[in-house]
Image (cartoon, rainbow, N blue to C red; front, side):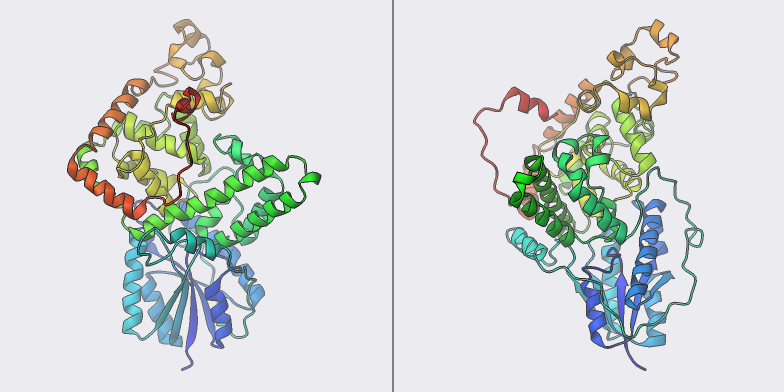
Length: 511
């Protein structure tokens, strides 16, 4: 029996910049390209049908691109080891080729089982580095140098295959796997081709406003890159995004006399490139500590906080019915579209953690299921930071009312997502509970009836939450664990020089 190479596509659903695919094309062996829908994943608490639907649609686009290379993508539903066993019985697998995956704790344990199965069956499983995450890194000191070098390595085109195993079965759909995802408003076009088109549109048209627009839940939709769902599915490589951004920056610098707004372009694209690096930085945390979705980085702090799940508070928070208009609008946008900008994600966790004192795993799992672009490494690192359970980050407790006044001063965003408040005058839109009763009756927006009263006093609970969070850090044992967390996960970036005295304007921006 002639042995085969098996290219296992996981969260790398593209034909460009795909080293496992290139390696298989050069091997001279027959090749099977494989995508597995794993039922065990469907039942995980941070998985939502919208995630599976997105991956499947991106895989279908991948299959179309693979056909142009002479290969077919094989779709299988089942346990990964059982799928491999059937293929091995029929074709004798010589090598499994894939990218390294930094997923949640479930995928980490699955990969350990597959490695053991490969060893028992004398199959070589070769995992190639993917994006900017460095496996088996001893400490963080050398991470940035390794990551930056990897980002400079050459981009690659799709290979051409001479001999592959054809796929003759039906491509499954969501009904075949028994999942019914919610319908998302303005869902992106899936696949690698759409990702590259989106990148080019950002670099050539929309990106000029990125640096100042990214904090707004409305402006970030138009001027943000919109690439995060593609990164999550691996439809676009991080290396391509970094290199094409750098190329665009260099072009603007060389031609700035001919380009209007060149300073704004350079500022925004530099900011975007920095955020790409931060993306890798946060995923690296999960690579080095695979169970961040299961336990707090500082369990002593978590224990000292003693947060308890209050069902009413939790339900009102996740339903966008807290009585804080801007927060509720953000939550409703997220559940409707599957996306919201980074600052608002932080605000959501802040409200849950400090104002409502809810446990981080429950709120973190709910948010994970809302994000179309759910990336475990980023998400759980941020959940830890925003819930105050790392012990190494400043407590960032956002004022929902201030964020609303800053990002939506006229209340148009609030009115769009909360039709109950559509008739509320602008001077009351951020604090509708202050409306006179006669006004509430006249516009049929009675607080406590058509729209809820604030779930708690925002100012008082935020101050209490901050105080309780800092108190939870005070024990010697908690401080010692925090030192270890900082040594493993702390950024090695040199701090910027700061003036001796922080201005009042800068202080206000912290909240």
